[in-house]
Amino acid sequence: MKLRKAKSLATALRWRERGKKVPFVLGLLEKKLGSPCPYCQKELTLKNVSLDHKEPFRTAAARRDLEEHYRLDVPKNLHLVCRRCNKAKGNLSDAQYRKLLRFLATDKHMEAAILQKLSQSYLIYERH
Image 1 (tube, rainbow, N blue to C red):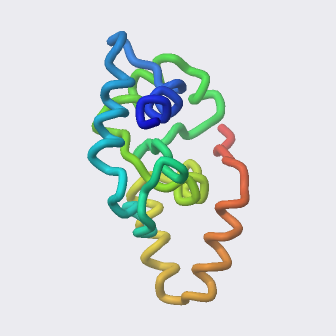
Image 2: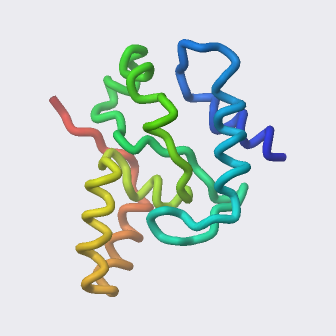
């Protein structure tokens, strides 16, 4: 089951080195499953885990750019988070999303409402 999930998560990654992305993702899964999501602290499971870019693609065009994939799809820029946080984070960087979470934590009602809306939205990229 973990191998199937690793293959699924690794599908969108573009690496120059062939045959290394699935073992990398499998290693992440083995290390991080059962631990808390770095954003919401919910336990990471095979059902809710998602592969996230700490520095995201900034535009839809960047997501289609192979060189941008080679720059961003690197081990130090990838981590596992829950699917809901990954969707809510959208194209914010890790630092930006953590800053948003700290701000929202000051008002629990606002936090719940905004994170709910963000997790229901589609990724919206900046237009340049």
